[in-house]
Image (cartoon, rainbow, N blue to C red; front, side, top):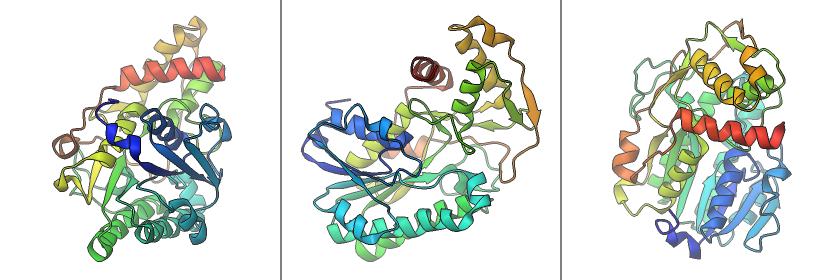
Amino acid sequence: MLEQFSQLKSSKVLVTGGAGFIGSNLCETLLNHGAQVVCLDNFATGKHENLEAFKDNSMFTLIEGDIRNLETCHKATKGVDYILHEAALGSVPRSLKDPITSNEVNVSGFLNMLVAARDARVKRFVYAASSSTYGDSENLPKVEHIIGKPLSPYAITKYVNELYADIFKNTYDLDTIGLRYFNVFGRKQDPNGAYAAVIPKFVIQLMNYESPVINGDGTYSRDFTYIDNVVQMNLLALTSENEKALNEVYNTAFGERTNLLELIHLLKEYLSEYDPEIAKVEIKHGPNRVGDIPHSLASVDKAKMNLGYDPKFNIQAGLKEAVAWYWKNLR
């Protein structure tokens, strides 16, 4: 992979939200490829410890600031070749509780970054889109050109991002690529807080012998996507020389779905290798969450065809890696 992305060695890349789960993994990978990396984060959800391994690297610059401030965005984009825009307020439940802040960060902040990218004349703007954009569409697998009505304020904000990106290409000739993430998991994902993602939350509960609560009967399914697949996709989007690949959105997933009962079974199996007592932890059920879609499964054919995407980690391989990281770092 190092040779494949050798062009990054002479580039300067801004990663917004670079102290977050996905952002910090991107920063680390870019540095490993010899890129100069600027991280912009306000630490609302990002963590300083996510940057610990490379914070003293001479090729790394941290700007503590907020994308809702246009001046900060201009400062961060100065002299930058590429942007990986990860900064956002995630979580459907959070957006239902506080739609105004989600909109300010995810829409107004996104627009600020587009304006700053345009003014700095960056070569490419790759941004985190979301599978929530598919809304109430029942089509499976999800293909990029068929979406439904959004089911949450968060989903609306991420769809608006795609619309703005399209306008900035057509109006200002800013090349963009949107990556619709599907339930990303892996190292550095925060297991704590009210809006923690399901996998790290379940892992920590099981390690503490606490019963995880499944929303609904456990048959809801997701295309769980390991972080290394997502990193690969970002680097491909950043460096692709295929003109047809630009100014499109792509599903970023593995292309298989796993229901919550299957997920719990796998987590208990892999965690039990470290502590056999975990196999005895019982599972509880609660009500379905508002705004949740029953099933999600991505087609990654478009990404494979246009970008050469080749995801290496299925759910089993990804969970084994994630469980090993959590056991080592958070036990």
